[in-house]
Image (cartoon, rainbow, N blue to C red; front, side, top):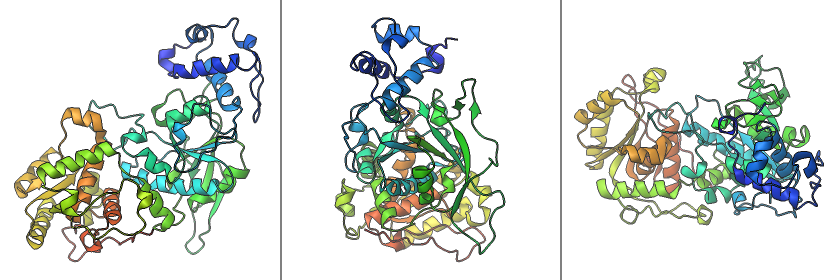
Length: 488
């Protein structure tokens, strides 16, 4: 059955051209051998040399092109060993120029988890990749952003978003080799992931005092979010890429840090592309250690978002890096010690989480009235006149906040700006502005606030001006956030 290309296959036609070029440049018949190599003659696929358009019309779109490209690109390139090392972007290599033995680590996170928790999971995966690279050539494939619970702006296309929209890829690459997902498609040969491991806990749980790190292949506890099609491939969410298929899917019960997966990936499977779904089930290898902070420092926000935040600071808060002593070094690897203590802008930075936190963390999240009282107290104490507030409050709460806090300043993008930066970009701009404030106060156990703590720690702020949170209405002297000191 021929499947209409506009419905089920959005492969870049460049891949088709590359496949044809390889057929024509391999003596008309042979594909370079690799693991599980397959020899294909052009006569078996094409009756006569032709254009990509004519070839595509002759092949079954669902299987023919995908399988052809998968074989040609992932198995058929005789690499000369163009090795990748941190500091050199994997995505800058020509398509198909990856080393023949390169392997790809992909991952995803539980759908309800938010933007900032996912950033934390990236740090765990980076640690695992470093462990894997001690044995062989691995690259981390960055999972496209999209379909997040907190990204609720209507009429904005927010799936298949590459990491470059939010982060500086060159900075990430100075820590570990990374490529975007679409670069993986081009480099590996098509929309196939050879092995998907769904990570889960142990059905029997664990008893207090008997913790041990372990991983075992077990029956799936929850219903799989993957379905097998008639060709034996597995369909799933795959970051909104409908054409992507998993070749094998199985469940692993895990209990331990990220690198506990290394022996499984190195010894128990020969798959070149491996996806860890529900990767949040793995813990940090060395939380808050040097490796953690190196990865965290490499997660530099995309420059265009930093520029927007800086312009907002200048125009509405009279804040600049020169006056605030917050000069930013574009190359994080050149920062070898804590920067001189910055002053920060002449404003108070606030993160006030609402929505699900109002009922989910009722005891330690303040009412708007209580929050306003604390803000006014801090403004007076710090002799500040303006407060920048990052919040997910709804329209009704925002109106109340404006009445309670006339000094409030917010970054409120136009529709065009929102379409350009997306909800994730707006969140980053909010965090960037809060990170440069004279003093910051956030919301208890919020990963949004945690990420601001880290940004301010990287900038060198006094912990007393950073690790602060609102108390709930019934809390008198609530426990403040822990100071995780940066390590170089």
